[in-house]
Length: 428
Image (cartoon, rainbow, N blue to C red; front, side, top):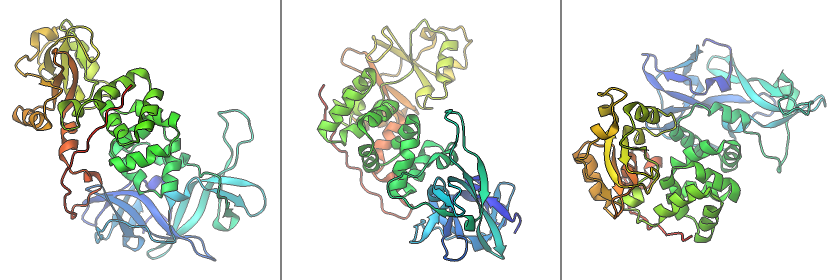
């Protein structure tokens, strides 16, 4: 096996191949077990294979670790990984732990772990990369780092001090929201909350939007009200409304009062609609411009990286005001059509008026038929006075049509029939 020493944090996200060069999956963690008189032994890798399934790959089946890739024998059990007693995940559980130097020189925090080949098909922890507490009061200062062997440190036993999640979060920085959600849900409950508390509000919001509702509620209930409201502010209004609807009425109302007024107003409006209607499915943040706006202005708006692809597929054209509920809805311009015209062309001259918007009371089934019949990714939603109040995107409809447990469902599990839940109206 090539590479006698490897740092675990650098393995996160590395591609795993079989002997033929076909991609098997990506490394998500390394699994070790503690021993009494020897350093922790590596038992295998946790690998994410297609379908978002995490499986265990025994270290004995790994034949090469080099240049950011891992080669296996190709024999992988695709049964979903389940952690056993005594097993420790290095990235998820070990990074960030406090340790004490046995020579009495103080404490440190584990930032990385090096594993080393100790025999054919056998690997063990060889060194810890640790950081001592900073000595300077400057907020930009950091403590010194050093390498320590297993015999030079021992873990600090504490039941009240939370484990640092800084290094763990660093390994999650490039994960897409759906992958981040799956990764968080795979963590032990206490560790997951520690990580959530240190993640930025927008990353927590992204992850919550990709989780089943029961997990969303579980995490939100463990956050303080102020933090929970900040996270809800970062969520898409329709997702925030769905989440608040699952909370006790009193807490839902309290969180709405703590949210930014504009965000709370959108959520309150959505809570007033039944979940199986266009109003219950829509998002209130479409791209809206006037008829006098140009193609160049529209392309600049839909080019924003934070805009979801489905919302960036078209621009709605209305009379002022240009925030939902807007002035009268005039038409829609799809981005493909904009690409066929010069930048100075007015949107009013090229907008599509043949597509009738749906009313907020239209059924989810009707919205689904329109999207399918006209090969659309979004459809405008108007109120009784023909003012634009939002758009329903294809991902909104898929979330509704798929079974409630589709995010956590195995390929070999039976599908649960979708049963819409009633959405409570939170009065303000």
